[in-house]
Length: 116
Image 1 (cartoon, one colour):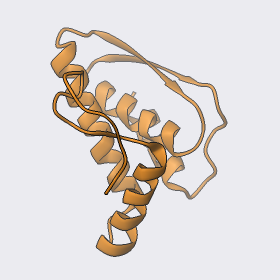
Image 2 (tube, rainbow, N blue to C red):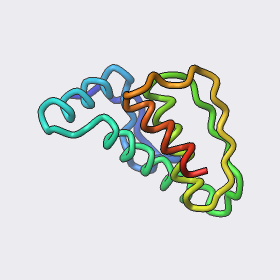
Image 3 (tube, rainbow, N blue to C red):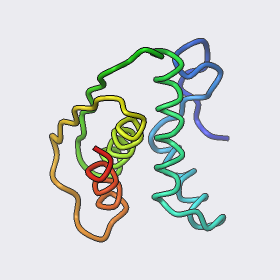
């Protein structure tokens, strides 16, 4: 059973929130056993994040996204790109390194740049 850290009324509504180790395990299963790509998982996570932001802040006209390194930064890049594609002003702060070429993180970074 995945390790649950919180459940209740929050920005995520009735969604479960899991520990990072559990999410990595679930990602591994989705990729290895179900053939999903890491990038497709990032896009799903980012789309859910954008939907939650829209539900909580429907009039948001400007969003700041802080990007560290690795796949978490990649998720943030996709969030920023999706928001920009919806004509929401986005300021993305890259605090970590530019992703290594030919990785899911690099594809997400390119998506962010291409959308705004």
